[in-house]
Amino acid sequence: MNLRRTLATAVVAVSTPAVLLTAGSAALADAMPAARSHHKPTYAELKKAAADAEQAYKDAVAAKAAAQQKLKDTLAAQDSPTHPLRVAAAAADKALEAAGTDKAAADKAVADAKAKLEAAEDETAKATAQKALTAAEATAAKAAQAKAEAEAKRTAAWKAVSNARLKAVQEYSKIQDAPDEALKVKNAADKALTAAEECVREPGLTVLANGLPSKAVAGTTVDFSFTLANGTDRTLDVDPLVFFRLHAGNQDQHFMKVQWSDGTEWKELDFEHVSHTGSVKAVRPGARTDVRMRMTIEKGAPAKNGFALFAGDASDQYNPCVSGPMKRYDFEVLAAGSKPGKVDDAEPGKVDDKDRPKPGKPAQGGTSGKSATPGASAEPAAADGSLAGTGSSSALPRLALAGGAAVLLGAGAVFAVRRRGNKGTS
Figure 1 (cartoon, rainbow, N blue to C red):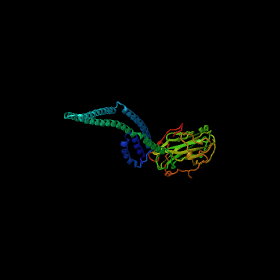
Figure 2 (tube, rainbow, N blue to C red):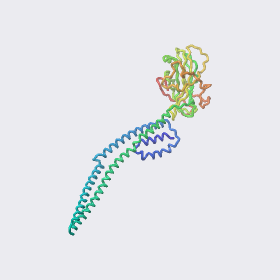
Figure 3 (cartoon, rainbow, N blue to C red):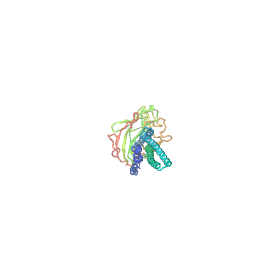
Figure 4 (cartoon, helix red, strand yellow):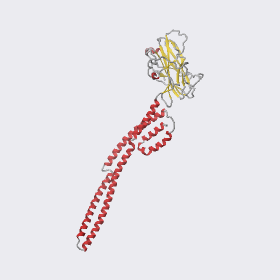
């Protein structure tokens, strides 16, 4: 169903409540072909639909309040003795009263004429009385007709008063239910938007470290990278989430500096907060790219364990929150001058989704010396630690972001730098 168009049609209907009864059916009929389509509304469309529905609801509430006041004012005006309809009705009342008086007088004249006719004793008197009776009866007939006409005019005048009041009430009835209808549309739009805002889990969206050592000696710098791969069937905008921390107090974190390259310069990660590296736009299915990184351990750094978190926070045109699985890498910081010998790469382990840190906030468990995943150590995601479900061959070229503008294997994706947090980047 084309929810966007359906909601928009409803929004238009409730935002013009005065014509709901006449135009609503036509608008709904026009919307039916669109409603039968299978267009999936984008997040932007859902957001606009929700905003439009919210405004339409406010407009409907305001329109109803205005209509209520208009009805009150109209009825008050119609009740005024100076209103034209009231003036006409009052005049009709007086005309009927006068016609009634005239008819009563004419009826009395007829009665008097009949009495004189009955009292006449000779033919001459009878003829005179009969003539007077005939004239009185003609006058009485005209008076009766005049009274009937006055009654009809009075009835019409008061019916006009009643019809005017009824019309005012009917006009209000067209709008009185508009807020309820608008609220239904608003609730549906809000529900659709809320559903779209729920995070979608995409196991194929992977961010894995390459060459991050399991041991690092204080006073040295190590180079490594991470690979972002879109193994989903959707084009995504991805914000790689990266976090490094020593199992030490906050005052000791400055002994470690982690940077990433945007292709022209090195950007430093915030050691206190989870942050993002540069945003990678329009990553097509099967596309992957590498980002160069380096970690510097100061000479005076304490011999502690550390860990790193990598994940892909993404969005597409339908969902603003798409989350790839988070990987945790544990490593050991050795005292300056140590000879670690051959050092293997740190192995990726999973982090429970409930423990996924939020950008801009400290990573939970990062300062306690405990695992970031309570009660669990790093669990390997795959036997070879390779990218999961990328749909790409390992022979595909890796495009380092140190050589200028990066173009992913999915054509058209561009690498954009955004800044977020205190001194980290995203």
